[in-house]
Length: 131
Image (cartoon, rainbow, N blue to C red; front, side, top):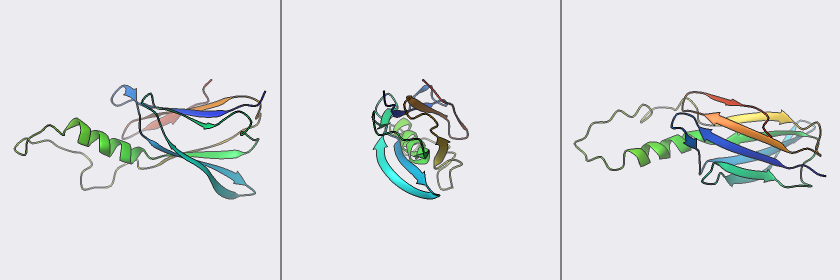
């Protein structure tokens, strides 16, 4: 049975799934990087990147646009403030620590399912091979 590739993004700073994150999938063939797909995570932070039969024994890279997600979240969390309220936005007017998070990995057995979760905050991330 052919495998598939999926991802799930969890916002560990706010304890919730990270919906609406732009995700790009690339494949490497003979050192050449080719974009396969762009998508956004759903409200549960999930997206299927390759369906059954589309996964090959190759090297892939998923790039997560986490900077835009956290910028949007700041605007969402503080949109009800009036102009006289004072709030410190740690990233306003300066470069974010994490803008894009690339995860490059190989697929040794394309008949298996591969799930590549991303646990992310504005300052750190981790990943693993999920089930």
